[in-house]
Length: 425
Image (cartoon, rainbow, N blue to C red):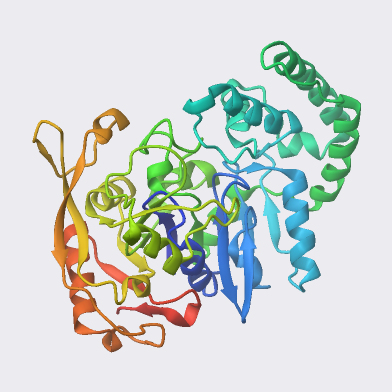
Protein backbone atom coordinates (compact mmCIF):
# COMPACT_ATOMS: atom_id res chain seq x y z
CA UNK A 1 0.00 0.00 0.00
CA UNK A 2 1.32 3.49 -0.78
CA UNK A 3 2.47 6.34 1.42
CA UNK A 4 0.88 9.23 -0.41
CA UNK A 5 1.27 13.01 -0.01
CA UNK A 6 -1.41 15.53 -1.04
CA UNK A 7 -0.22 19.12 -1.40
CA UNK A 8 -1.71 22.35 -2.68
CA UNK A 9 0.07 23.57 -5.80
CA UNK A 10 -1.19 27.15 -6.11
CA UNK A 11 -1.71 29.74 -3.33
CA UNK A 12 -3.81 27.42 -1.17
CA UNK A 13 -7.61 26.99 -1.21
CA UNK A 14 -7.32 24.48 -4.08
CA UNK A 15 -9.91 22.05 -2.76
CA UNK A 16 -7.40 19.78 -1.02
CA UNK A 17 -10.04 18.94 1.58
CA UNK A 18 -12.18 16.97 -0.87
CA UNK A 19 -9.21 15.12 -2.38
CA UNK A 20 -7.86 14.34 1.07
CA UNK A 21 -11.29 13.17 2.25
CA UNK A 22 -11.58 10.77 -0.69
CA UNK A 23 -8.10 9.35 -0.11
CA UNK A 24 -8.51 9.39 3.69
CA UNK A 25 -11.51 7.06 3.35
CA UNK A 26 -9.05 4.46 2.00
CA UNK A 27 -6.22 5.23 4.43
CA UNK A 28 -5.27 3.62 7.71
CA UNK A 29 -3.36 6.70 8.90
CA UNK A 30 -3.65 10.41 8.02
CA UNK A 31 -0.83 12.77 9.00
CA UNK A 32 -0.66 16.57 9.12
CA UNK A 33 2.92 17.88 9.16
CA UNK A 34 2.93 21.71 9.11
CA UNK A 35 0.96 24.90 9.61
CA UNK A 36 -1.64 25.60 12.23
CA UNK A 37 -5.24 26.75 12.54
CA UNK A 38 -4.61 29.34 9.83
CA UNK A 39 -5.37 26.54 7.37
CA UNK A 40 -8.86 25.38 6.51
CA UNK A 41 -10.21 22.28 4.80
CA UNK A 42 -13.88 22.13 3.85
CA UNK A 43 -15.10 18.55 3.56
CA UNK A 44 -18.53 17.25 2.56
CA UNK A 45 -19.12 13.82 4.07
CA UNK A 46 -22.36 11.92 4.51
CA UNK A 47 -24.36 14.95 3.40
CA UNK A 48 -22.78 17.17 6.06
CA UNK A 49 -20.17 19.92 5.71
CA UNK A 50 -17.17 19.99 8.06
CA UNK A 51 -14.75 22.92 8.24
CA UNK A 52 -11.54 21.52 9.69
CA UNK A 53 -8.55 23.62 10.67
CA UNK A 54 -6.02 21.64 12.70
CA UNK A 55 -7.50 18.16 12.86
CA UNK A 56 -6.74 15.86 9.89
CA UNK A 57 -9.62 14.96 7.56
CA UNK A 58 -9.28 11.29 8.52
CA UNK A 59 -11.05 12.11 11.78
CA UNK A 60 -14.35 11.49 9.98
CA UNK A 61 -13.42 7.79 9.76
CA UNK A 62 -13.41 6.11 13.20
CA UNK A 63 -10.88 3.43 12.24
CA UNK A 64 -8.35 5.91 10.82
CA UNK A 65 -5.48 7.06 13.02
CA UNK A 66 -5.00 10.85 12.77
CA UNK A 67 -1.60 12.33 13.54
CA UNK A 68 -0.37 15.91 14.06
CA UNK A 69 3.39 15.96 13.54
CA UNK A 70 6.16 17.98 15.13
CA UNK A 71 6.04 20.55 12.32
CA UNK A 72 2.51 21.64 13.22
CA UNK A 73 1.96 24.58 15.60
CA UNK A 74 -0.92 23.96 18.00
CA UNK A 75 -3.34 26.50 19.42
CA UNK A 76 -4.62 24.54 22.44
CA UNK A 77 -7.84 26.50 22.75
CA UNK A 78 -8.42 26.16 19.02
CA UNK A 79 -7.88 22.42 18.80
CA UNK A 80 -9.96 21.70 21.89
CA UNK A 81 -12.76 23.79 20.40
CA UNK A 82 -12.48 21.77 17.22
CA UNK A 83 -12.52 18.50 19.17
CA UNK A 84 -15.59 19.59 21.17
CA UNK A 85 -17.37 20.73 18.01
CA UNK A 86 -16.74 17.44 16.23
CA UNK A 87 -17.76 15.31 19.19
CA UNK A 88 -20.95 17.35 19.55
CA UNK A 89 -21.75 16.23 15.99
CA UNK A 90 -21.05 12.60 16.83
CA UNK A 91 -17.50 12.46 15.48
CA UNK A 92 -15.12 10.80 17.93
CA UNK A 93 -11.60 12.20 18.32
CA UNK A 94 -10.20 9.24 20.25
CA UNK A 95 -8.09 8.35 17.21
CA UNK A 96 -6.19 11.68 17.33
CA UNK A 97 -2.50 11.85 18.33
CA UNK A 98 -0.25 14.92 18.70
CA UNK A 99 3.53 14.81 18.66
CA UNK A 100 5.01 16.14 21.95
CA UNK A 101 7.59 18.07 19.88
CA UNK A 102 4.90 20.24 18.25
CA UNK A 103 5.08 23.87 19.32
CA UNK A 104 2.31 25.67 21.19
CA UNK A 105 0.76 28.95 20.10
CA UNK A 106 0.56 31.16 23.17
CA UNK A 107 -1.51 34.34 23.71
CA UNK A 108 1.57 36.51 23.17
CA UNK A 109 1.97 35.04 19.70
CA UNK A 110 -1.55 36.20 18.83
CA UNK A 111 -0.91 39.61 20.33
CA UNK A 112 2.39 40.11 18.54
CA UNK A 113 0.93 38.90 15.24
CA UNK A 114 -1.78 41.56 15.34
CA UNK A 115 0.50 44.35 16.60
CA UNK A 116 3.23 43.66 14.04
CA UNK A 117 0.74 43.70 11.15
CA UNK A 118 -0.64 47.00 12.43
CA UNK A 119 2.86 48.44 12.63
CA UNK A 120 3.58 47.45 9.02
CA UNK A 121 0.66 49.56 7.84
CA UNK A 122 0.29 49.44 4.07
CA UNK A 123 3.21 47.00 3.94
CA UNK A 124 1.33 44.34 5.91
CA UNK A 125 1.84 40.73 4.87
CA UNK A 126 -1.84 39.83 5.27
CA UNK A 127 -1.52 37.16 7.96
CA UNK A 128 -4.59 35.53 9.49
CA UNK A 129 -3.43 36.94 12.88
CA UNK A 130 -3.59 33.44 14.35
CA UNK A 131 -0.11 33.70 15.89
CA UNK A 132 1.42 31.24 13.44
CA UNK A 133 4.44 33.30 12.34
CA UNK A 134 5.45 34.43 15.85
CA UNK A 135 5.19 30.82 17.09
CA UNK A 136 7.50 29.59 14.31
CA UNK A 137 9.84 32.51 15.11
CA UNK A 138 10.18 31.26 18.68
CA UNK A 139 10.71 27.73 17.40
CA UNK A 140 13.60 28.89 15.20
CA UNK A 141 14.94 31.03 18.05
CA UNK A 142 14.81 27.94 20.30
CA UNK A 143 12.68 29.70 22.90
CA UNK A 144 9.28 28.13 22.15
CA UNK A 145 7.01 26.00 24.29
CA UNK A 146 6.08 22.54 23.08
CA UNK A 147 3.24 20.11 23.72
CA UNK A 148 5.54 18.18 26.04
CA UNK A 149 5.93 21.30 28.19
CA UNK A 150 2.19 22.02 28.12
CA UNK A 151 1.21 18.60 29.46
CA UNK A 152 3.69 18.80 32.37
CA UNK A 153 2.18 21.54 34.59
CA UNK A 154 5.21 22.42 36.75
CA UNK A 155 7.58 22.55 33.78
CA UNK A 156 5.04 24.55 31.80
CA UNK A 157 4.51 27.13 34.56
CA UNK A 158 8.26 27.71 34.82
CA UNK A 159 8.89 28.01 31.09
CA UNK A 160 5.72 30.00 30.32
CA UNK A 161 6.47 32.60 32.99
CA UNK A 162 10.03 33.11 31.77
CA UNK A 163 8.91 33.37 28.13
CA UNK A 164 5.90 35.53 28.97
CA UNK A 165 7.95 38.08 30.91
CA UNK A 166 10.19 38.61 27.88
CA UNK A 167 7.20 38.84 25.54
CA UNK A 168 5.45 41.37 27.77
CA UNK A 169 8.53 43.58 27.57
CA UNK A 170 8.42 43.29 23.78
CA UNK A 171 4.66 43.94 23.61
CA UNK A 172 4.78 47.02 25.85
CA UNK A 173 8.22 48.44 25.07
CA UNK A 174 8.37 47.92 21.31
CA UNK A 175 4.79 47.59 20.09
CA UNK A 176 3.14 49.85 22.68
CA UNK A 177 0.57 47.21 23.61
CA UNK A 178 -0.83 46.06 26.94
CA UNK A 179 0.95 43.36 28.98
CA UNK A 180 -0.63 39.94 29.37
CA UNK A 181 -1.69 38.63 32.77
CA UNK A 182 0.75 35.72 33.02
CA UNK A 183 -0.93 34.15 36.06
CA UNK A 184 -4.18 33.95 34.11
CA UNK A 185 -2.42 32.62 31.00
CA UNK A 186 -0.63 29.88 32.95
CA UNK A 187 -3.82 28.87 34.78
CA UNK A 188 -5.83 28.72 31.53
CA UNK A 189 -3.23 26.81 29.54
CA UNK A 190 -2.57 24.34 32.37
CA UNK A 191 -6.20 23.26 32.03
CA UNK A 192 -5.72 22.87 28.27
CA UNK A 193 -2.61 20.79 28.88
CA UNK A 194 -4.47 18.39 31.16
CA UNK A 195 -7.08 17.82 28.46
CA UNK A 196 -4.55 17.39 25.66
CA UNK A 197 -2.26 15.00 27.55
CA UNK A 198 -4.29 11.96 26.43
CA UNK A 199 -3.45 12.70 22.77
CA UNK A 200 0.35 12.99 23.09
CA UNK A 201 2.37 10.35 21.17
CA UNK A 202 5.48 10.12 19.00
CA UNK A 203 4.10 10.72 15.51
CA UNK A 204 7.37 9.81 13.78
CA UNK A 205 7.27 6.33 15.31
CA UNK A 206 3.57 5.81 14.58
CA UNK A 207 3.86 6.91 10.93
CA UNK A 208 7.02 4.87 10.34
CA UNK A 209 5.55 1.71 11.84
CA UNK A 210 2.41 2.09 9.74
CA UNK A 211 4.44 2.36 6.54
CA UNK A 212 6.64 -0.59 7.51
CA UNK A 213 3.49 -2.62 8.22
CA UNK A 214 2.31 -1.88 4.67
CA UNK A 215 -0.62 0.21 5.81
CA UNK A 216 -1.96 3.02 3.65
CA UNK A 217 -0.66 6.34 4.98
CA UNK A 218 -1.85 9.72 3.73
CA UNK A 219 0.12 12.90 4.44
CA UNK A 220 -2.27 15.83 4.37
CA UNK A 221 -0.88 19.14 3.16
CA UNK A 222 -2.08 22.57 4.26
CA UNK A 223 -1.80 25.91 2.43
CA UNK A 224 -0.09 25.74 -0.97
CA UNK A 225 3.27 25.60 -2.74
CA UNK A 226 3.33 29.34 -3.50
CA UNK A 227 2.98 30.01 0.23
CA UNK A 228 6.12 28.02 1.06
CA UNK A 229 8.59 30.14 3.03
CA UNK A 230 11.43 29.29 0.61
CA UNK A 231 9.74 28.56 -2.72
CA UNK A 232 6.66 30.78 -2.48
CA UNK A 233 6.15 34.46 -3.20
CA UNK A 234 8.24 35.64 -0.25
CA UNK A 235 7.49 37.59 1.97
CA UNK A 236 3.79 37.00 1.21
CA UNK A 237 4.05 33.40 2.39
CA UNK A 238 3.34 31.24 5.41
CA UNK A 239 5.99 30.43 8.02
CA UNK A 240 6.45 26.75 7.23
CA UNK A 241 6.97 24.34 4.32
CA UNK A 242 3.69 23.27 2.67
CA UNK A 243 5.63 21.53 -0.12
CA UNK A 244 6.09 17.76 -0.20
CA UNK A 245 9.58 17.97 1.32
CA UNK A 246 8.08 19.61 4.41
CA UNK A 247 6.17 16.41 5.06
CA UNK A 248 9.37 14.53 5.80
CA UNK A 249 10.67 17.08 8.30
CA UNK A 250 7.33 17.84 9.91
CA UNK A 251 6.23 14.24 10.42
CA UNK A 252 9.57 12.51 10.94
CA UNK A 253 9.66 10.13 7.97
CA UNK A 254 12.40 9.90 5.36
CA UNK A 255 11.83 10.76 1.67
CA UNK A 256 12.42 7.20 0.47
CA UNK A 257 9.28 6.15 2.36
CA UNK A 258 7.02 8.32 0.15
CA UNK A 259 5.54 6.62 -2.92
CA UNK A 260 3.23 9.21 -4.50
CA UNK A 261 2.77 12.99 -4.44
CA UNK A 262 -0.59 14.33 -5.63
CA UNK A 263 -1.00 18.05 -6.29
CA UNK A 264 -4.41 19.67 -5.81
CA UNK A 265 -5.23 22.63 -8.06
CA UNK A 266 -8.20 24.55 -9.38
CA UNK A 267 -9.10 24.86 -13.06
CA UNK A 268 -8.34 28.55 -12.53
CA UNK A 269 -6.16 30.43 -10.02
CA UNK A 270 -7.00 32.21 -6.76
CA UNK A 271 -5.05 34.05 -4.13
CA UNK A 272 -5.80 35.68 -0.76
CA UNK A 273 -3.81 38.64 0.52
CA UNK A 274 -1.15 40.84 -1.02
CA UNK A 275 1.52 40.06 -3.59
CA UNK A 276 1.90 39.79 -7.38
CA UNK A 277 -0.65 37.69 -9.27
CA UNK A 278 0.04 37.69 -13.03
CA UNK A 279 -3.27 36.22 -14.24
CA UNK A 280 -5.52 38.15 -11.83
CA UNK A 281 -8.76 39.37 -13.43
CA UNK A 282 -9.86 42.74 -12.08
CA UNK A 283 -13.03 42.76 -14.17
CA UNK A 284 -16.44 41.14 -14.52
CA UNK A 285 -14.86 37.82 -15.50
CA UNK A 286 -12.92 37.73 -12.23
CA UNK A 287 -16.09 38.58 -10.30
CA UNK A 288 -18.00 35.87 -12.14
CA UNK A 289 -15.38 33.22 -11.30
CA UNK A 290 -15.41 34.33 -7.64
CA UNK A 291 -19.19 34.15 -7.35
CA UNK A 292 -19.56 30.91 -9.33
CA UNK A 293 -16.76 29.23 -7.36
CA UNK A 294 -17.80 30.66 -3.96
CA UNK A 295 -14.27 31.95 -3.54
CA UNK A 296 -14.26 33.15 0.05
CA UNK A 297 -11.79 31.96 2.72
CA UNK A 298 -12.72 28.95 4.89
CA UNK A 299 -11.13 30.47 7.99
CA UNK A 300 -11.29 34.24 7.37
CA UNK A 301 -14.22 34.65 4.96
CA UNK A 302 -12.09 37.02 2.90
CA UNK A 303 -12.91 37.22 -0.84
CA UNK A 304 -10.22 35.58 -2.95
CA UNK A 305 -8.55 37.20 -5.90
CA UNK A 306 -9.34 35.24 -9.07
CA UNK A 307 -7.62 34.71 -12.41
CA UNK A 308 -7.07 32.31 -15.29
CA UNK A 309 -5.17 29.04 -14.91
CA UNK A 310 -1.41 29.58 -14.71
CA UNK A 311 0.71 26.76 -16.16
CA UNK A 312 3.95 28.54 -15.19
CA UNK A 313 2.98 28.18 -11.53
CA UNK A 314 2.01 24.58 -12.14
CA UNK A 315 5.33 23.59 -13.71
CA UNK A 316 7.07 25.21 -10.72
CA UNK A 317 4.93 23.11 -8.37
CA UNK A 318 5.49 19.92 -10.36
CA UNK A 319 9.25 20.42 -10.02
CA UNK A 320 9.36 21.57 -6.37
CA UNK A 321 7.06 18.81 -5.11
CA UNK A 322 8.09 16.00 -7.45
CA UNK A 323 4.43 15.52 -8.35
CA UNK A 324 3.35 12.15 -9.68
CA UNK A 325 -0.22 13.32 -10.41
CA UNK A 326 -2.52 16.35 -10.45
CA UNK A 327 -6.12 16.66 -9.23
CA UNK A 328 -7.92 19.54 -10.96
CA UNK A 329 -10.93 20.86 -9.01
CA UNK A 330 -13.83 23.16 -9.93
CA UNK A 331 -13.80 22.53 -13.67
CA UNK A 332 -17.58 23.02 -13.47
CA UNK A 333 -17.09 26.67 -12.47
CA UNK A 334 -15.82 27.47 -15.96
CA UNK A 335 -18.72 25.87 -17.84
CA UNK A 336 -20.59 28.36 -20.01
CA UNK A 337 -18.01 31.12 -19.68
CA UNK A 338 -17.06 31.09 -23.35
CA UNK A 339 -13.44 30.94 -24.57
CA UNK A 340 -11.00 30.13 -21.75
CA UNK A 341 -7.48 31.44 -21.34
CA UNK A 342 -4.47 29.60 -19.94
CA UNK A 343 -1.19 31.32 -19.07
CA UNK A 344 1.64 29.42 -20.78
CA UNK A 345 4.55 31.82 -20.05
CA UNK A 346 5.35 35.29 -18.66
CA UNK A 347 6.54 38.34 -20.52
CA UNK A 348 8.81 40.66 -18.53
CA UNK A 349 8.73 44.42 -18.99
CA UNK A 350 11.82 44.24 -21.23
CA UNK A 351 10.09 41.70 -23.51
CA UNK A 352 11.91 38.63 -22.17
CA UNK A 353 9.75 35.48 -22.16
CA UNK A 354 9.92 33.29 -19.05
CA UNK A 355 8.68 29.70 -18.94
CA UNK A 356 9.88 29.16 -15.36
CA UNK A 357 8.47 30.85 -12.28
CA UNK A 358 10.67 33.75 -11.08
CA UNK A 359 12.59 33.42 -7.81
CA UNK A 360 11.55 36.85 -6.43
CA UNK A 361 8.38 38.92 -6.27
CA UNK A 362 10.29 41.88 -7.70
CA UNK A 363 10.79 39.95 -10.92
CA UNK A 364 7.29 38.46 -10.77
CA UNK A 365 5.79 41.96 -10.46
CA UNK A 366 7.35 42.80 -13.84
CA UNK A 367 5.60 39.89 -15.52
CA UNK A 368 2.43 39.84 -17.58
CA UNK A 369 0.81 36.60 -18.75
CA UNK A 370 1.25 35.11 -22.19
CA UNK A 371 -2.08 33.45 -22.91
CA UNK A 372 -3.27 30.58 -25.03
CA UNK A 373 -7.00 30.73 -25.77
CA UNK A 374 -8.98 27.49 -25.68
CA UNK A 375 -12.54 26.64 -26.60
CA UNK A 376 -14.93 26.79 -23.70
CA UNK A 377 -17.54 24.18 -22.85
CA UNK A 378 -21.19 24.32 -21.87
CA UNK A 379 -23.67 22.38 -19.82
CA UNK A 380 -24.13 21.34 -16.22
CA UNK A 381 -21.14 19.14 -15.38
CA UNK A 382 -22.18 18.49 -11.78
CA UNK A 383 -24.04 15.31 -12.70
CA UNK A 384 -21.09 13.70 -14.48
CA UNK A 385 -19.93 10.56 -12.70
CA UNK A 386 -17.15 9.47 -15.05
CA UNK A 387 -14.51 11.25 -17.07
CA UNK A 388 -16.07 9.91 -20.29
CA UNK A 389 -19.29 11.82 -19.56
CA UNK A 390 -17.55 15.21 -19.80
CA UNK A 391 -18.05 17.26 -22.98
CA UNK A 392 -15.32 16.73 -25.57
CA UNK A 393 -14.27 20.40 -25.34
CA UNK A 394 -13.83 19.99 -21.58
CA UNK A 395 -11.69 16.89 -22.12
CA UNK A 396 -9.57 18.89 -24.57
CA UNK A 397 -9.14 21.66 -21.98
CA UNK A 398 -7.95 19.09 -19.43
CA UNK A 399 -5.62 17.46 -21.97
CA UNK A 400 -4.05 20.84 -22.74
CA UNK A 401 -3.54 21.57 -19.03
CA UNK A 402 -1.89 18.18 -18.69
CA UNK A 403 0.49 18.95 -21.58
CA UNK A 404 1.36 22.43 -20.31
CA UNK A 405 1.85 21.30 -16.70
CA UNK A 406 3.97 18.30 -17.71
CA UNK A 407 2.13 16.07 -15.24
CA UNK A 408 -0.71 13.55 -15.58
CA UNK A 409 -4.14 14.67 -14.38
CA UNK A 410 -5.72 11.73 -12.59
CA UNK A 411 -8.68 13.42 -10.87
CA UNK A 412 -11.15 16.05 -12.08
CA UNK A 413 -13.66 17.74 -9.78
CA UNK A 414 -17.12 18.80 -11.01
CA UNK A 415 -18.54 19.80 -7.62
CA UNK A 416 -17.82 19.82 -3.88
CA UNK A 417 -18.94 16.30 -2.95
CA UNK A 418 -16.83 13.16 -3.18
CA UNK A 419 -19.27 11.74 -5.75
CA UNK A 420 -18.36 14.67 -8.00
CA UNK A 421 -14.71 13.67 -8.22
CA UNK A 422 -13.94 11.85 -11.46
CA UNK A 423 -10.96 9.52 -11.37
CA UNK A 424 -9.02 8.67 -14.50
CA UNK A 425 -7.49 5.19 -14.43
